[in-house]
Length: 170
Image (cartoon, rainbow, N blue to C red; front, side):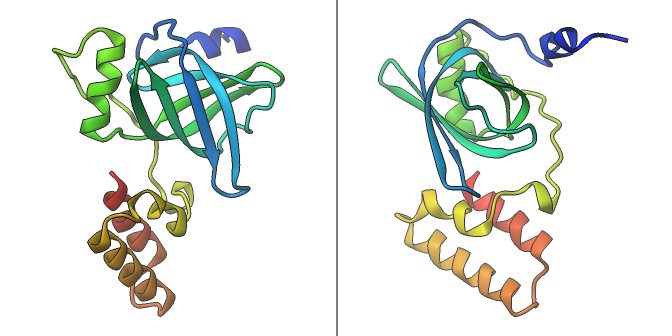
């Protein structure tokens, strides 16, 4: 049976040592961490921070490097007290993949990373936070409010409503 350190070394994609500034937002507590990356890959990264979030926490991460930004939802897959946390990105929007692959040095071949995280209703961020990034888009905001109203009236299940809202931020 592999030890804990060996489990932490196994990843679905290789990572590169890339240092960049990072903002990590946890919507439940509305906590914003300013940190940095230690390594980065097409499916995740390690965030250096003294106060990592707990394993299983859903976060929104923004990484800034060389005048470009990458944003994605991520799941904390492991947390090391006073050291940092490993994040696995949820399926990344295509326009974000270009930035990520450019940093990784393979912008010409943009394969979609094989990410197999579950998208169960309980794993999705709260609906109110999902539309925060799209406030500038009037149509997206109106559609989000309509979906939330249908869920509140019981005409649309929480699971289906959250799945639709998730597509709005993808």
